[in-house]
Image (tube, rainbow, N blue to C red; front, side):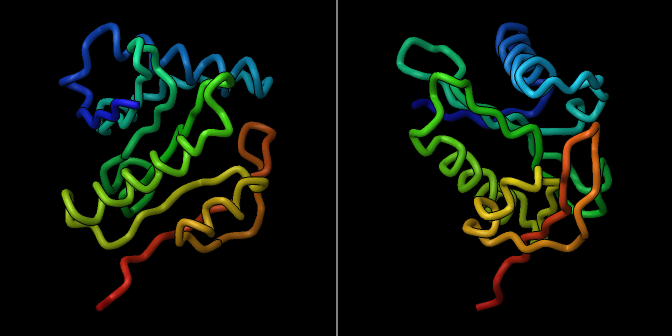
Length: 151
């Protein structure tokens, strides 16, 4: 897997197309959740994505600057192609995103709006719940936070 992190302005047209196609396929079609995925926030985000040996997009997510969706840096749109699931790509991608936020960007706090059924996964990465369950586009979600541990 070849991983890349790029700000919006550095994405090629092909990379952006593949990322948006993957998100639409998963979040709108697979999850039967019609909502406008292209929300303007990508212009203020880095895209973290992994491609297989043939250059096909396997996994992607966005890293949003503080103030775009939350007061802190936020992670979202975590997507893994159906044929690539079960190989640990989501965990590896999240670990890379956390490392980028803490070490490259110098952030201390990361927030996410997680689908409720995935809270155990995010807790295993160091996130903790900070809200009750709420519906977002008809899907149960919970807000979670990751705070850098002080040494």
